[in-house]
Length: 316
Image 1 (cartoon, rainbow, N blue to C red):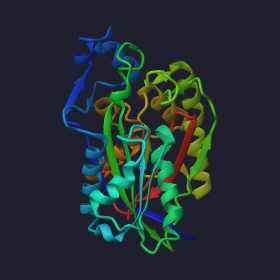
Image 2: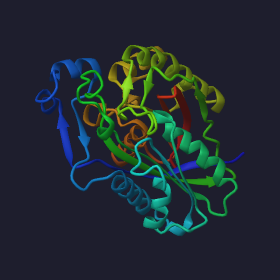
Image 3: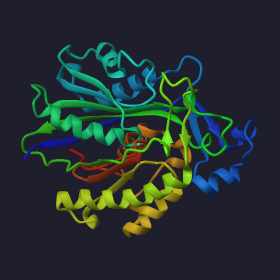
């Protein structure tokens, strides 16, 4: 058996914090309406010279520095995103140059929406097994404020910008992360028009259908990961769920009969950051000592596609 372990984390949020009260000034909404329906109080937006690449760089450099590894030690660099600065080159390819990674480092972007970071972890696990270098860099980064329709009061209050990064290490004797992934093709429930459609590239979402999908698939995915790993839910230290909506998370925690203390979240301060959500929360848990060496975190994401993914990640 072989697999990866979590070595270090990093994250970056834009300077500008946008509260619900700020949104009240330009959208027909209120702090009370947003908070009771989503659990969100504030989020961060890129402004001025801030960019997707800048967020990726800040989070990646932090994770690499904390790992105590050299860029030359990294064999895989993956960016989970749907809002990169350019369609090509990929954000990961630009990072190869900016971070000083070797030219034979496998670098590409991956789009599985809010499940993308977990997809990236499993992809890195597979690629590192064939790499001459045992460390991988996996980043989730989004600048959703730039594809948010601020005339749509039901969606514009949800999303924020940010990046999270991890350095993982592959080992022949490390346990597999036991990833579970799935997709259910749907072009109506949650989508963003492409560059050739002639439509504005804003997020479109049927909130009720997304809720039905999420409360079905998140508990099921969680059980499947635990069963695949042969670990009971009671033995897992932390559950790191995509921060989509607090009501979705509360429903899943009740259905799974989990202790809410093991399911800490940050949606109140970050909003929904799609592919960046899970790694930003992972970084928060690690840096605050809520996830320590040797402990296990079950990570799960779900979103557009429709997609879902989960895995069991151990901190080295």
